[in-house]
Image (tube, rainbow, N blue to C red; front, side):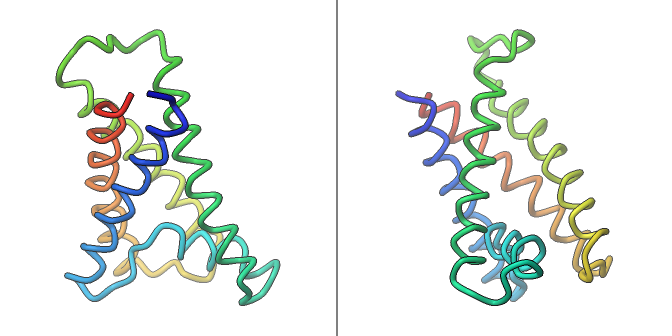
Length: 135
């Protein structure tokens, strides 16, 4: 399968996981929503452009993560447990990135950021499992 296709499927699976956790917790943990709110809304306002750019950015990051994984000489892709490495690595990278985004925005409420980052780690495990199974 192509890297692009695998990254799209993995990003969709991760996002579905985040929507399920959002529904269960009654908090919005949607990555594209927060990308739109924290990065694009201050520039473009509350417009459909912010919403579209949030989604495009989410898929672009998913694609870049897939390319990084495929090109990494440090990973032995023949190991069955590799999805845990993929998910954990990108989960930590994603959490670090989101902490920076939240710290430089108006939404720096720890009571939201900590559970958001926890669900984000598990969402990236879903991403990793899905990515490995579609590559």
